[in-house]
Structure formats: C-alpha cells, structure tokens
Image (cartoon, rainbow, N blue to C red; front, side, top):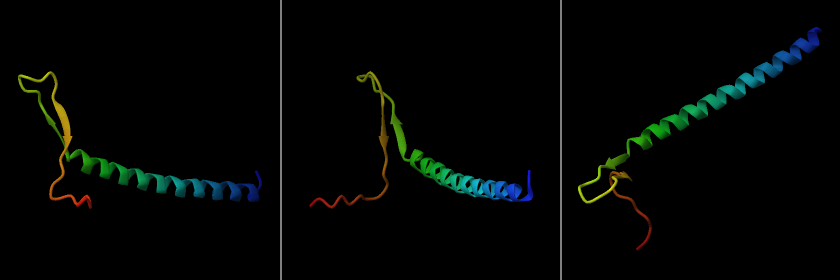
Amino acid sequence: MTEGQTQVLLNEVEKMNSTLGRIEDALVGINESLDALSQCVDFVPPNRYQVAGYNFFRIGGSVDTGNY
C-alpha cells in the first residue's frame, strides 16, 4: 500500500468515526427522551369487573390544545 493510499484510507476512517460519533449522540438523545416519556406512563390494574388493566399517559400541568 502506498503512502497516498494509506492517507486516503485514514481520511475515510476519520469520516466514519465522526459519523459514528454523531450517531452515538443522537442515540443518547433518543434514549434520554424515551426515559423521560417512560416516567409519564402508568398502569391501572384491573378491578373485579374488568378482564384486564390498562396503560395511560400521564401529563402534569395543563395542555393547551387551541380549541375554544
């Protein structure tokens, strides 16, 4: 392998490393978002009249839907 080929290969490896770093940052952000969302999901177990319980999404505070 010539010196020029080695330099091209090193440049490509650096580009891939940079790309993988950005992908890692994005995945960390997604993981943090999913962790935050999972804190907002609760389960209500079935009572004696129900066959199964249910999950619900809990939102604290008020939500403005813009519908008046």
